[in-house]
Length: 554
Image (cartoon, rainbow, N blue to C red; front, top):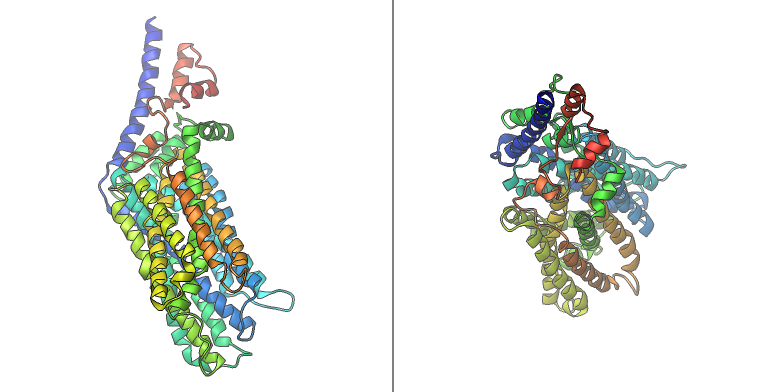
C-alpha cells in the first residue's frame, strides 16, 4: 500500500509541477512591463506590414506607367490592368492559408522570415521583368506579383500571432495595432517615393518620344524595386527572433524550455536552447484534423471563426472596392488624369504627379489617422465596440454616398462633401473593422490553431478583395463610364450591415489572457509524460496516450 501511495503522490507532483510551471510562465508574459523587447517585436513585425502596403499600393501608379510604356503613351486594357492589380491578392489568399497552417505545425520562428524572402524575390522579379516576342510583360509581372502575394499572405498570420503571443495582456491590442498601422505608412511612403522618382525624371519624361518612353519605364521599376529595402533590413531580425513561449509550451510541449525562454527574453530579448530539457515533453491537446473538427464543431468556438472570417470578408469588399474607385475621387478634387496640356508628354508627367499627390492626400486625410484612433482606444474601449461602431458608421456613410450620389455630385459644394464622406469612410475603416479584424483572430483561438484560424480569417478577407477587384471592375461601367458606381456604394452598405451581425458573434478580447479566450479549461490542461514512467515503475498502467489525452482534452 505504501508503494502504491508513493507512486500516486509522485504522479500528482509531476502533473502539478508541469502545470504550475506553465501557469507561472504564462503569468510572467501576461503581466510583464513594456520593455525594449516588446518594442523590437512591434518594429520587426511592423516593417513587414510597411513593406506589404508599399508593394501593394505602389502598383496603382506603376500600372499607369506600364500602360504608357507598352502602349506608346496609351493605357493598359481592362484585363491587363486587372491582371497586374489582382494577382497579388490571389497570391495573398493562398499564402495566408498555407503559412497560417505551417506556423502552427512547423513553428512561428521557423517560418518567420521565409515569407519576407518570398516578398523580396517577388518584388525584385517585377522590377527586372522584361518583354519579348514569345512572352508578354503582363504575364511576367502577374507571375511575380502572385509570388510576392504569397509572401505577403504569410506575413498576416505570422506577424499577428507572434505579436499577440509575446505581448503583455494589458497592451496586446496596442502592440498588434501598432504593427498593423504600418500599412498606412507603407501606403504613404509609396506615394512619397513616387513623387520623388517622377520629379527626378521630369525633364526626360517631358521630352522623350512616345515610341521610346525609357524614363517612364525606369521610374516604375525603381518605385517597385525600392520596396525591397525595408524588407532586406528587417530580414535578419525576423530570422533571429525567438520562438514564442506559448508555441514552445503548447505545441512543442516543452514547458521547461519555454519557462527558461520567458526569463531570458523579457530581460535580454534573447533565448538559449537547453539540450538537457529538450526531450522532456508534457502531454497537452495536440492539433489534428479530428481535434480541429471537434473544437470548431462546437458552436461556442465555431461561431468565433465564422465571425472573424465573415467580418473580414465584408470589410474587404468595401476596403478594396473603395480603393479601386479612388481615381474618381482624385479627379473630383483636381488630381485626376491631365489631358489639357500642350503635349502628350506633358500630360503624362502631370498625370503621374497628380496620382502620387492625390494618394498622399487620401492617406493623410483618412487612412493614417484612423489607425491611431484605434491604437489609443483599443485597450480601453475594446475591440468589439470599435468594430461595431465602425461597421455601423460605414453603413450610414455608404447609404448616403450611394443613394445620394447623383444629387451630391450635382453641385460644387456637393462634390466637396462627397470627398469628405470618402475620407470619412477611409477613416472609419481603420478606426473600425480594418484594424480589429486583424487583431481579434490573433487572440481568440487556442495556441495550436491560432495561426491557422487567423490565416483562414485573413484569406476570407482577401477573397472579399478579389471579389471587389474582379466583380466591381466589371460592373462599374454598366450604363456608361462610372455609371454603376452609385450602386456599388449601395452594395458596400449592405456588406457593412452584415458586418454588424457577424461582429455580434465575437467575444470581447480586451484585457483577457489568450488562454481564457481559447475557451478551454486550464485546470487539467497539462499531463506530464513522467506520469507513465512512474506508473510503469510501480506496476500500474495508465493506458494509451490517446486515453490519457481524452481525460484532459477539452
